Image (cartoon, rainbow, N blue to C red; front, side):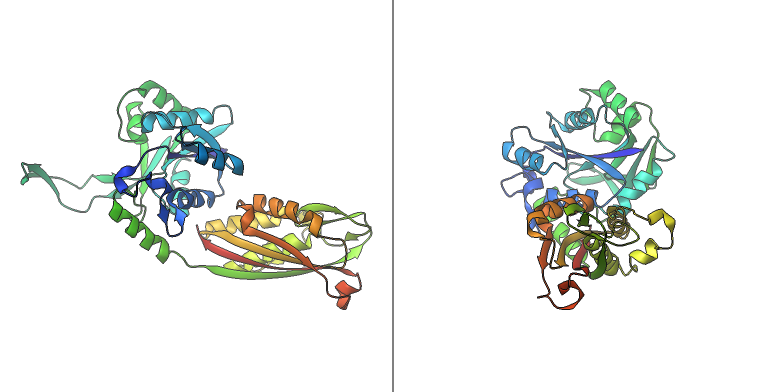
Length: 380
């Protein structure tokens, strides 16, 4: 079942100050939108991401298009029109469920996103909400004129999740009708919306003061982890080696239960190490015939998914291949690109380099290849 996310980022957002739309303002060294996209990317169930942008913001449109990681859609005259544009961009792609999220909520947690996804298994729509705990007053000319019962009231949050076909139909029928959010549009179409527990930290940046609060939340979440990995495979018969996911011609192959990709194995173990979750052998025992000859990207994808479940994404990865032959340099750019794609991170966060052992030891004698890797894991 394909799950997609629509990030609505086409608004002007100038009430928050700074002279530029709030989604592009700096927040702890990254734009607000970058934080939000990283939180979405940390959820492995989400297979496609639509980014709704101001069509007149050519520089940002071209920048995001160049990454190849997002489906881009032009924003409309209001939020509902922007959402419809995002929904249309997913037409024909086999999407069954869609999450719609405000770009100005950069502190949303992967756990909250997954709660919404889980609720959609039994409901056509689900959204996070916070119970209202403060007393509610009615004002008249600056004075309290009455109160309201708060026992059944919730403060709405995003992401709001829906059956894709149902929310498309709801938006089509509501075109031109003002609505506070997509839940209101869904309810007007008769969809039952399940409330899942929201989070106080999932604030929507609206005023200048919200930036300092969001920055504080993100700082407190910066529990960085570090792991390292080391792997060795010896040479055997063959006409190529697979290193960091790339086929490299060679007069010998590498021997191993899987495809013997020593680079991916080291990186995978570095991630497992940072999570304190063992190594490849524990998750994919060599005694299990299912993994005989398996492509090692399976292992790395599992490690990244496990990190996401624990609330982390790879911050950066550094892999060093140790061998006399083959020459790694010509293939290193492709290796970086492949590993970045597997892990769902930018290439500039992936390093692949090589060294020899000056003809010393088993690598110096040309008996095999070794790899050492370091991975940092940052909160999603």
